[in-house]
Image (tube, rainbow, N blue to C red; front, top):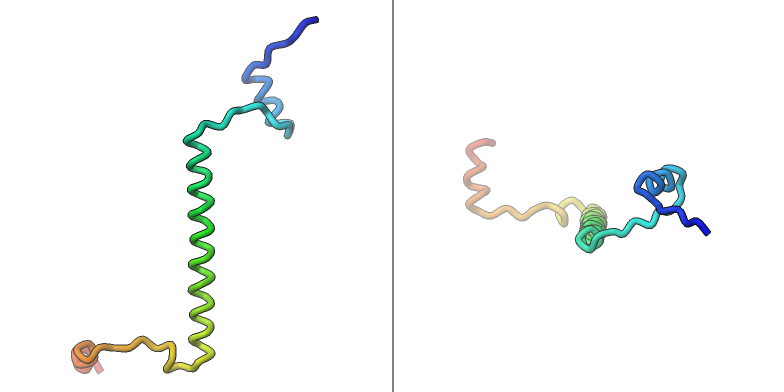
Length: 81
C-alpha cells in the first residue's frame, strides 16, 4: 500500500480549506497565548470595576464622587479664579 507523505503545501491546503492541520504549536507560543488571555481578562475586570465604581459614585450624588483637594492645592489654584 502506498502512503503519501504530507508536505507543508498539503498542510497549507488543509488550512485554507478549513480542515485542521497537524501543526505543533511551540511551547513558547502556548505560554504567550495564555499570557495574552490573562492580560485580556485583567483588562476586562479593571474596566468593569472602574465602570461600577463610577456609576455608584454618580448615584450617591455629586459631592460623593468629587475628588478631595488638598489645602495647598486650593490655595495655589485661587490665583486662577
